[in-house]
Length: 485
Image (cartoon, rainbow, N blue to C red):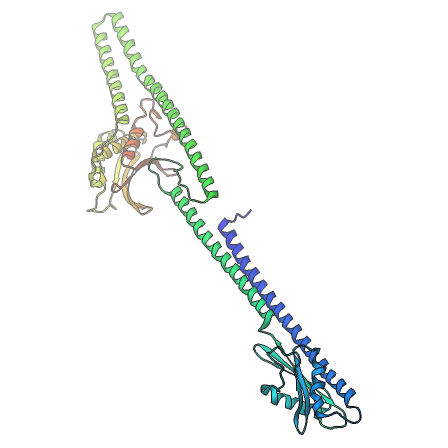
């Protein structure tokens, strides 16, 4: 199922709003055009009726003897009186206009003069009527109106007479046009206002979301999983902020309880392991002492004392390693040439390697000659000693231990990667998960503190110690920053 963000939905709503506004404007334009078309058609029909009305009245009054020229104006006025907005008259082919009337004129007084602007058009129309001897209609559209004229032949005693009627239909003026412009203006105002409001809302909402995302994604050195979020001023978002703050508080309380429980469990495991490691030497010392007292043999007593001293040394070594494991490590970082450090560590264990018929090789040729990593040399050497000793104890006769170093770049940060690999049988899967925990060891005579100390030294350098998974040889890596951040 596809999930859409609120921002995308609001943008879609904005697009639909614009589309609906465009469709509404198109429909309004169509309705306006239709209404103006109806007005033009109605005006054209009225002009035709007015022209026929003049013909009928002329035929009724003229008869066989004709009608006086002075009475023609009254005849035209009476014929057009029931046709609002229509003017007209009677035209003579030889003398021009004989009568003119505009009875529904809305000016300050009656209009009796033929419109000068349309004189030529009226003359041409009536001339065409006389030529074809039937009614002729003319339309002259302009930007704001459509001028409609119709001429009709007048048959009677006097030859060469025609009747004409004229009207104007306003297409971009008048109440209809005003209503159309008002509707378009209101539509534009609502669309632009809605678009501006939606844009303002989207901008503010996106900014508030971005600030929340930045606060949630910001690194937190105190280890918090959820930071305390400030209110955004948006009621719906602030309800989520309150819920997240409450969840963060509950999470911190739960984490504190978990840490306390894990600390108690770790202390219990450590105490049990220490008790187990110390009890065995004590039991051996007690057995030797009891046997020496019972036998009364001075030589046996001397041998028992030597055994006791050996077990005391074992306990002392165990306690010293425990102190090294638990004490805070104050590092003395200095630029340290790595190749001489690796050579010194390898030389320190040459005798043990020779005794076990194991060869030690050093590979540090790719490091820069002048730029050295900033390390605590003594602590790093101790970690390498522990790893080398562990590798020598697991490598078979005729095997090899390789001590290497390389400079790598990870996520833009330069790091030193020290590795110790051996050709032994590998790590027992049963102890692989807790390999760097105290007292985890695969050797009966081991204390299980060597790798734990290596891990603590790496963490003190803000690095890590790990076993390389899937390597052809058993390989441990110390991954340290080249320079302290």
